[in-house]
Image (tube, rainbow, N blue to C red):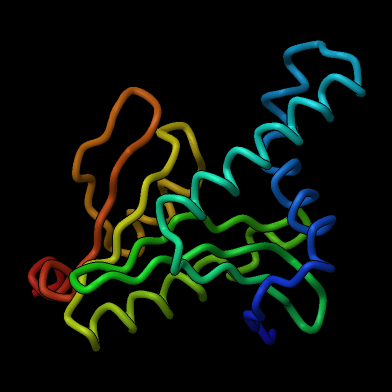
Length: 162
């Protein structure tokens, strides 16, 4: 399996929206909204997230995740002096559970380890990804009622292993 990142371009807008919508489909279907209203709500949320990431992290790297040449998801990463922030990783449903997310997070862990930085993220408390992050050695660092803040560093990973 070849997992490759490429920079987001203007032609990727439909793919990015499809990825975003797929991550929220189950919860928003519960609202009972008509399809047109549901799409309008999703597009508002999609635009708001994009603007928020760009405003808060203007130098963040936004990539399309490709798997064996097929567009499979998106990745937002902001690099700072002391930490790498995994802002968002999302895969289309047909690409979930096959190791793509683990592969990308491990790459970020390697980068964090070689540059002596923390790898930080926020994840919804109810997300199945929490189990992935715990399995990969992340520790809970707090959060709020909706999101859990998690962090990983090579030093704490080595302490946990030894």
